[in-house]
Image 1 (cartoon, chains in turn brown, red):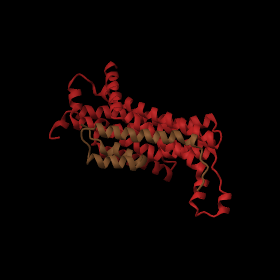
Image 2 (cartoon, helix red, strand yellow):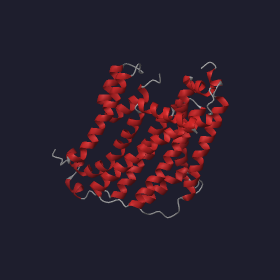
Image 3 (tube, chains in turn brown, yellow):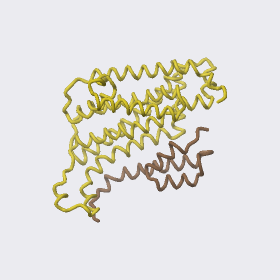
Image 4 (cartoon, one colour):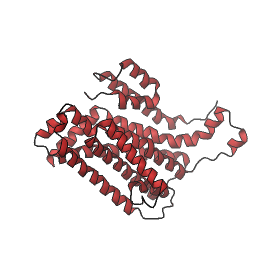
Amino acid sequence: MDINVNWGLLAPIIVLQFILMLTALVSLARAESVTGAKWIWALVIIFGNIAGSIVYFILGRKEN
Amino acid sequence: MRQAWLIYRKEMLGMARSYQLLWVPVVFLLLVVMQPVTSYYLPEILAASGSVPEEMLAGFPIPGPAEVMGGVLGQYSTIGVMILVIAGMQIVAGERYGGTAALVLVRPVSSASFISAKWAGQMTLLLLSFTVSYAAAWYYTVLLLGPVPWRPGLMAGGLYMLWLAFAVSLTLLFSTLLRGSVAAVASLLLIGGLSLGHSLAPSWFAWSPARLLPLANAAIADALAEPVYFPAVSTVCLCLVCVGMAIWGLRRQAIPDLRGE
């Protein structure tokens, strides 16, 4: 398992993923109500990778 | 005009507050940038998985830049369209069923400025997401796999953006006529139907926006054999028709929505 990875190349992608996750978490923390329990959404966002955040933004948010 | 500008600004503020202005471009970026990166590292990933024989790996071709850009475009036409449609499905429906549309429209706000402001907002989101992500995918492809010529690259990108603009306009129209989730399903079905129809009977659908996709794929492979004006112009017209019908639809039924909803 010695893939020769150019981390300088991948760093922006990792940072972007992190930004996406952070945005989703901030949005979750500030939302007054979401569909379902907040802590479940937090798990989905943290462990669900990109898809988790997308699913939260699409299904989790309630329009006041 | 001034009224539309005000609603547009409110719309952009709303998109920023709901983080849509951030997450849609970021998701687009991640989606398409992965394409060149995984193509480049695929042999190594396969080698690390250990189940692929040595001699097969030795002859494993790394795809050329044009092929990878074709894959990037493919991402837009599948997941890209889906995200745009779902992000835009509540654009008018949400306000109609939430009651804000009635509140806005009993004031002297014409439904024309209401709809065109909404449409401009969605177009801004599309323009931002698409240009940023396409530029990033292009950059990574050049860095990892080799040069992509300017003209075909820009041409293919422009054609795809037109197709996405059509998807967004269609979603706006359905969002005016139907409930949010139904609007999304209807738009996706129609868009999917169009591209399926085109792949089954290309000559019947030569006029349609679906024609833009194969044209863009030909453009990026530098094998464009026919002019693109006809489908491009018809797509622009269809977008305007969608907006026009949305204005008409909203005018016809903005107030009755309040009954029993």
